[in-house]
Length: 152
Image (cartoon, rainbow, N blue to C red):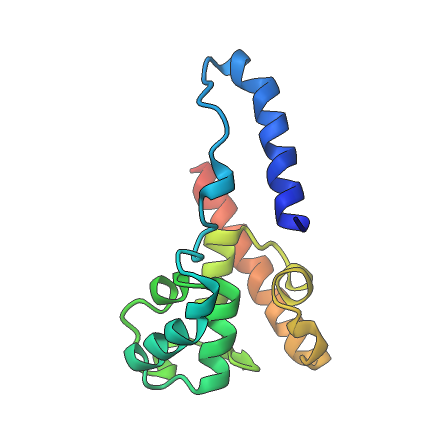
């Protein structure tokens, strides 16, 4: 296994300890469950990229590839009913848009530009300092709104 397998096993071990206290013990199940967006076989990656490009004709090959590799089939949910690049909101560079950042805040609990650019996407390798700062500001403002909304 790799990191995901290790984290999965650690999480299952932790759950095994707290489940009796919660009165909820269904046993382990994650070994055979796909990760979010990973509900296709590895050899079907190109098929998913092609499907994404067919559904969203404004995506080029590199952009569609990045989205499928990062989000899997959840890329379809992220893009929803977008019909153009403009529908995705502000562009931050290197195909990152407000739609993707909003998704990362809401679904992946991203709290900072560093989190998004380095831990989630590795786009920090290609972003300029100005682009990274704009992403960080957008995420911090959006994450703050999300936290406040959840407290309301």
